[in-house]
Length: 356
Image (cartoon, rainbow, N blue to C red):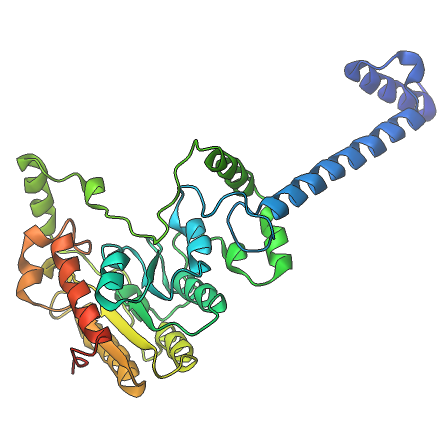
């Protein structure tokens, strides 16, 4: 027998009711509408409560809540941990860059200059992410920093400032509350909340407050076999993925704008990190032709702003021909990092003039 439209609707509702375990006599269209309304109100209440909890707890330490259960944040990646570090009033100055400056120890710079340094390093970070980190740090300083150290490796010579290699939580670094609220609606926020509660009760360690991480243990080179493999890889030339043969260097412009906003007595050190000799562009290639152009762009930037210096180790120099100083073409050991630290300290203390 064919059911009418109303009867078919009742049968569908009844079927849903049976699956939900509702008594058959209560399954009517009105009951279904009430169920949907109650479910929607409950879901909205749950989401609102969860959002309110995350706003109140502030698991990433963005400073948007008056309540803090425990100082700092749990051990996590720098893309989120740097939000807390960047607003920490204990630090006056910062090292900003990707893993090419990771081995520069902020504690060494602090000990040598008397200026509290924090490392806001983003592994694999490109200019857009690092500029966002710079802006966050500056937005949370009551006084201008005494010194800023910025790692300028090859990615800063790109003609495209919008490039993105890895996901980055721009919403966490946004000064817009609306952006922040929108960003909270994601699974990573729930993971952050869970990790923070684990940290509060002592089940998760604290992220290093000054941001330093010695990655030597990650490479695990120590055995003769590991050393032989590493040196074999270093002998292979590494191609340059990003070559800018034009005249537009948007990252350099962006840095120039930010430096112009600093007072003249803020010391700025631009670091061109060491590269193993086979990681430098091969002679006669477009990358080799582009290399001095980029170098000159940042050298001019340093010349035009007072109290701005360049520590340039992206050159053919004896240290960059010693495989014992490197793990791979662009990641170097503490032996070279200590040399960089000494130069930075000398610059800030006024004991070394800017390089020509």
